[in-house]
Image 1: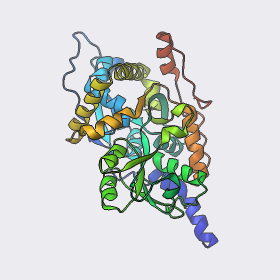
Image 2 (image 1 turned 135 degrees about the vertical axis):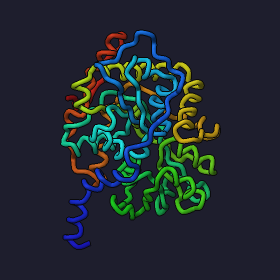
Image 3 (image 1 turned 180 degrees about the vertical axis):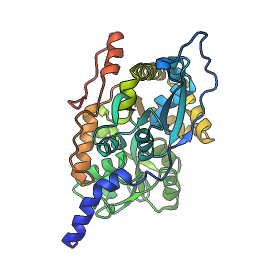
Length: 366
């Protein structure tokens, strides 16, 4: 490759990471709430706010938001202030909505949170809590791929260039000793960037041999005859790694800490309820998916997908830092300055009030 071409590609990497799908999905569609939450008589607005705007994905790894919406945990915590929801299909579009002030708080994955923080020069978002761990698998066509070494030379789908699963797969491939160009996806294994909505069809048609994807896409592929070759959790200490965090606009956090605290308290209550009532929580999440997207997941997809996700209030900050390092190692990101990306003050205040130990920000606190 000529030196000038290589230089242009290197300089283009930050723009690719931060802008590649901003226009793909707009600012998200309006979500429907559970429809059964009654505001208590005499309830007051928090900080005088008419509403708090909450964003999330129609994805089981965002189960805290799905269940919190469906069962009314957020609305109850906010009193007479309306919990208003927006559903997104991609991290960059949710980050853009956060940056523009279209939403106040959001559930989002680590890579878009990192990219959003970098894009704003560290001035817009903060990660204020954890939500979920796990729920990511490498699923393959068992007729073509029988072992991990067989992945070499195959076509493997990831959701999009530079997203959380794309980075994870590129890092794993590098650890196998395989060379892959991070931008084109070409090399010892071919990385095919494919929207999760179309990956099952691509898998069924044979245009990809496998995929490194989050739930419920992984279980959809299994339902199509795929086989789980690797669970990403097995690659992490204690099998825990962040897949979903809670972020907030810094301006909103500064001006309305009571509202942010109310949402965080509701998130803690939601996760506690999810872990105490897994079957009911699974059903509630599926009901909200149906309300948001018009279609529920079948049991053969829902059950294994839900089983592989761990709902936790711990932001697992050290694993986010590691994921950023993986993106740098893969050549998708220059080493970012993530100092200040976390502010766990309100979360740890709530935990201490419940007699629980505070969570660590891995030295990346505000």
